[in-house]
Amino acid sequence: RYDAVICDGAVRSGKTFALSVSFFLWAMCRFQRQRFGVCAASINGTRRNLLGQVRPVLEGLGFRWEEKVSRNEVIVRGGGRENVFYLYGGRDERSQALIQGMTLAGVLLDEAALMPRSFVEQACARCSVKDGKLWFSCNPAGPEHWFYKEWICKAEEKNALYLHFAMEDNPALARSARERYERMFRGTFYRRFVLGEWVAAEGV
Image 1 (cartoon, rainbow, N blue to C red):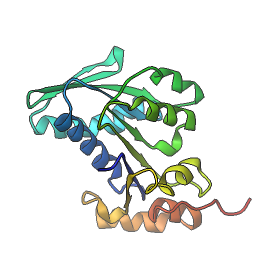
Image 2 (image 1 turned 180 degrees about the horizontal axis):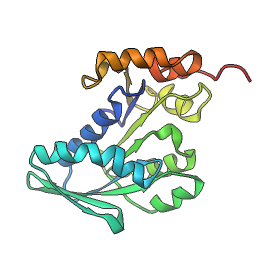
Image 3 (image 1 turned 180 degrees about the vertical axis):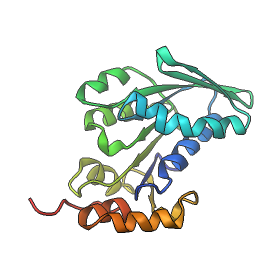
């Protein structure tokens, strides 16, 4: 019943993996011959952080995966369905031109807080197919960040499911690694990276 899913929280909490696998499974279960957007701060980041984790899971579930590198395009087939996923990098203000004009059934924006607002809003505007949804993940920044104020603080108003992740939510992260992170960071970085809070930088 939601129009969007937002995942934020601590680093290494598994939010990107959980969101990206869920996004692809949702797309393949709900749609046939539709187009989707998969976005990160760069194309290389999209391939490394998203596709690199998702592909083995989908193939393990019986889906077939065909990537057309020169076209930044992935075709996924399975269960009698086929959908196309276009890869985008939201590096700067000019990036919005890359996605402009597309019609999408859904869009995944990983590390949305690192992308310019113009790109994120252009991607959201492309999602116009019936029952389409927006999927966001990000690490916290400052409390005045536009994404925090416009999406996280207004999640209910925007009919978005908001999920906050802690390091304990990642079953693959050893307790010793969590304790190392807790020792490593102090102040603002501890609150952002370990606790997943949207807090202002200390000092000037």
